Amino acid sequence: MQRKSLFINGSWREGSGGRIAKVFDPSTEEEVGVVSFVEREDLDAAAAAAGNAFKGWAAMPAMERAKLLRHASSNMRSRSEQIATAITREQGKPISDARLEVSGSADQIDWFADEGRRAYGRIVPSRSPEVIQMVLKEPIGPVAAFSPWNFPVYQLVRKVAPALAAGCSIVAKAPEETPLCAIETIRCFEDAGIPAGVINLVFGVPSEISEHLIASPHIRKISFTGSVAVGRHLGVLCAREMKRTTMELGGHAPFIVTAKADLEAASRVALAMKFKNAGQVCVSPTRFLIDNTQYGRFIDLFVAGIDKVVVGPANDPKTTMGPLAHAGRLAAMETLVEDAVKRGAELLAGGHRVGNRGYFFAPTILANVPPDAMLMKEEPFGPIAIVNPVKDIQEAIFEANRLPFGLCSFAFTTDLAEADLLGRSIQAGAVAINQAFAGLPEIPFGGVKDSGHGSEGGIEGLQAFLVDKVITQRSAAA
Ligand code: NAD
Image 1 (cartoon, rainbow, N blue to C red):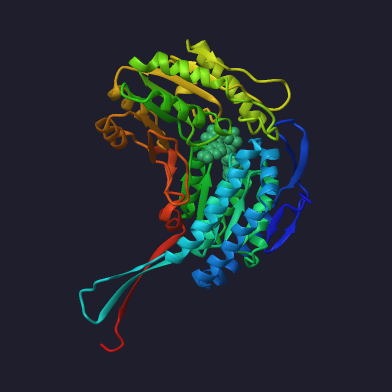
Image 2: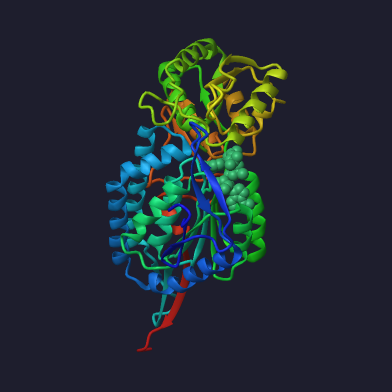
């Protein structure tokens, strides 16, 4: 079944070159399936299908598109267990988290279904009584979307739902590590009656696909979620082709705890946010910057809390942290910890692989990590926390803004003036104060600096797929 993993112009098929890749369960390293790879001619067919379907889809009234999208979300809810099981098996997150990912994805579809009906333009008062000046919002055209493996359903839906709601067609490249849950997701749209060619799904060699689709004359916009390095490369290719982009890239989130913070609340959120999805989350906190006066106590609470993190196979209901998504992530964690310790960091917890089967890595805390450690510059994208002392709030803000990233950030204080200062001073797309952060459908989320540009979520997430057209019209009566 999985061999027919490409969805092009309304039918499921294999790649024309017969190339496939194996899919592994990261909890067991067992092969759980295969995925077909596209060839250039398949990509051309997908881009042409999106190009042909665009006109009819864009012309369909937004109310009708909304009904189909609502049907897709209802399919997703009724198939929740099946999709969540696929996520758990391919990506490794605990089944309870996978179920939340599915319901959160269905919520995204519902929200954009409704928001698509509110893509209002405006009338601009004109300088002449005979002229009317209208600003129309039009769908940008067929989109190529590249979604990552960390939230394989949610991240795919974050691109498909607003694109479709705006009236765009799409060629989505989902992650090769997690094809089945992406296939199940696209089936929810197919079975809702979305016309052939409006959604196309491909897998293959990521660089081959992105280079080919960016150059395709059918494709008008690229939406990418992934690392800064890949985002930068794709940005250059898009600039050459004059294609618009949304880039949701990496982060290195600071987590500031001031002298006036509620430590119990801060450590509770620290544990919940750091080890969720084994740290493979773009908003995951990485640099815990703790006021000197709170440092020792925060570390005690944080280290004690780690005992409650249950590392184990994703399908075990007792597990709270599953494996990393692929073997490469495990090697990356080992390198980062080794480098930090070699340069003088203190290893307070974890720092090693768990077992010798499955890509499990222990929840890890490193204290007093020196600025020259790789970890202080590179996003770990795994269960590693850096806990460093700071002398005051100014030093914390300086360190928070030191890196070229600016995606998510966290701050804890019970002082209103400090909260105000932190909210305004931290250079990031999002600042969560005294609480956790979640990318909800109704709020925009995106980065500043090297973390990318454009937003997903919120009205901004819909606007990303719309262009403005001005019509200045002389009245027929004039
Ligand atoms: P990676 O950079 O090789 O891959 C990340 C994602 O980008 C994958 O889904 C991959 O298929 C895609 N990709 C890679 N090269 C591409 C190309 N030329 N064209 C189109 N897509 C391409 O690294 P990885 O080890 O798989 O993931 C780790 C890094 O990726 C992390 O450091 C993190 O910064 C980033 N990442 C970010 C997010 C996010 O939500 N922002 C999600 C997953 C990965």
